[in-house]
Image (cartoon, rainbow, N blue to C red; front, side):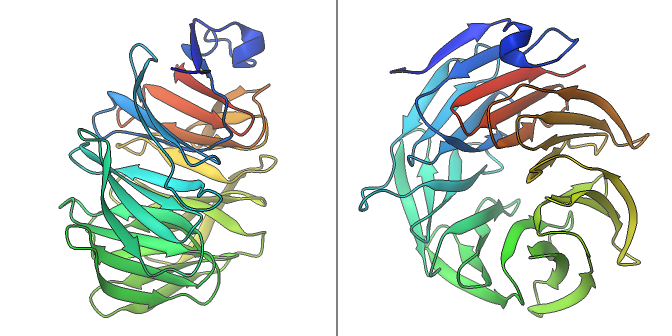
Length: 311
């Protein structure tokens, strides 16, 4: 595992203020971790780094299963975002060199490179068929839809501002995307923007749907917000977290993790209440939650990856 190490039953100093007993595994890496994501069955999770490496970890043991090296570009390409395919057999990663790459986890090789963006690919999403994908770049203001098997671009959606956090609706007929301070709902078939969710706060960084998709949550440096899709309106500001730029919701929509600077929060989305805060993390923190809502992962910019058993 090189310079990475894992420690079971981390102490409160390593895991932060967590009355549930600290992190289950504390994985110290030699890289700046930018992104984390769980596989569809929750059996493994992946981390992506500033140095361009993707590592896949076992959710039970905390041990590294495989390591995917950064692309051979000069000087290097950072991992900006990543997502597992619905089958869990591949990973789609967006890189700072403007390319989204699909990795096969068995062969540990890139099987498709999606080229067309003019700058860093900051968000990616798989359709349920495991073939079609969406990518968004903060440089060229486009969200693009691709056939991942051929590398052919299928559609292009011109956003009005910096796009981030591309998230498919549950029926996959449309998607929502951050457009700097606002959120837009796009229809995929017509390639038209249907609704705009106006936000007077700072830039929106991350999005996730709750339950059947009637509501979604957003986060950014201005706080965490709950929105109604049908009415295109803000329902409630849930809270504020310094440097908030990452959130993740369990499959049933009942639990949410939010990551900020040196802190992670667990929310009960039925009661719309903060359940627990995790402090003393190390820098900008990206979060992921297992589909069943029982495990959480924090990827921290100063190197650690922590696996948490959630209360």
